[in-house]
Amino acid sequence: MSDTTLPPPRAAATALRSVWRKHGVWLVTAALLILLAVFDRAQAAASVAFTIDALAGTAPFLVLSIGIAAWATATGADNLIARAFTGQPAVMIGLAALAGALSPFCSCGVIPLIAALLAMGVPLSAVMAFWLASPVMDPSMFVLTTGVLGLEFAIVKTMAAIGLGLMGGWVAHLLGRAGGLSDPLREGIGNGGCGGAKLRNPKSVVWRFWAEPERRAKFGREALSVTLFLLKWLTLAFVLESLMLAFVPAETITGLLGGTGLGPILLGTLVGVPAYLNGYAALPLVGGLVAQGMAPGAGLAFLVAGGVTSLPAAIAVWALVKPRVFALYLALSLAGAFGAGVLFQLWSLA
Image (cartoon, rainbow, N blue to C red):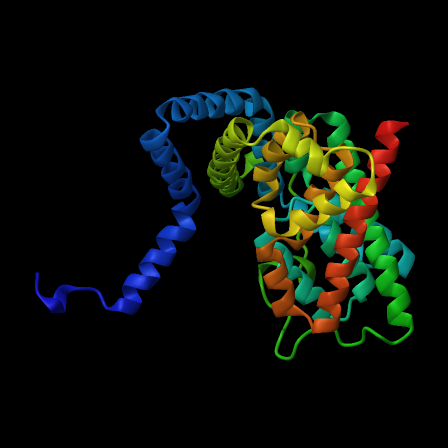
C-alpha cells in the first residue's frame, strides 16, 4: 500500500473517536474479560455467569424502562415540559422540579433546552430546579432502580430529585432577588438546539402514536437505541460489580462507607463525583456496595451527587454558564446530595 492511500492523521483520529463514542463501553467490557481470562480464568467465567444472571434478573424492568422511553419519544410527551416554565416563581420552581424528576429527557436534550430557557429570559430559579432534578431520576431510571435496589430506594431517590430541584430553585430565586445571578449565560450562547425547539414550538401530544407510521417507526428506533444504550452500560456495570464482590473485602466497604455517622455519607457524596460512570451503570455498583455493608444514606448520596456532577454533565454546565453560576450548581448539588443521604439514613434507622 502506498503512502498516498493511507488516511491522513486527522481523518484517522476522527475515525477512532467515532469508534470510541459508539463502541467504547463494549471495548472496555471486552478488555476486562480478556484480561480476566488471561490472568484468572475461573473469575472470568464467574464474572460472565454473574453478568448473565444479573441481566436476566433485571430483564422485566429493563423491558419496561425501554418501553417508557420509546413511548415518550413516539407520542411527543416530552413537549409537555414547556408548561413547567410559565406562571409565578413559586409555581415555576415547583413544576420545574417535578418535571425534571419525571421527564424522559436524555442528557443530549437537556443542555440545549437549558440554553434556550435562559436565553429566552426564563428565571434562573426555575431552570436550576429543572437542571438539578433532571439527571437524578426519570421514568426509566425509576423502573430500573426498583429492579436493582428495590421500590423503597426508587421512591426515596425520586423524592431526593424533587427536593434537590426545589432547594436549588429557591436558593437561586433568593440570590437572584439580591442581584447576584443576573445574565447567567456565557457570551455567545444562544437559544438553539433540539431541546430549545421543544420550548419555542411545543407540539401536541399524540397518545395513540401507533396510528401514524412515522411515529411507529420512531418508537422502534428509540426502543432499539435505548436497548443498546442500557445493555452496554449495564453489562459493564455488572462485570465491575462481580469484580468488586470478588476482590474488595466486605469489611473494607463497611469500614469506609458503613455505619450511621455523617462520615460515610460525606464520603459517598464526594466519591460520587469522580467515580460515577452512568446513571444506569451506577445502580448495580451501589447495589453491590450496599450488600457489602455500605450505609443506605451513603448509597443515595453517591447516586445523587454523581448523577448531577458527573464529568459530562459538569463539562456541559461549565461551557454553558458563567463561573459563579457553575459554582452555585456544584455547591447545590453536593449539599443536596449530602442532605438527602442524611435524611434517608435517619429515616432508615427510625
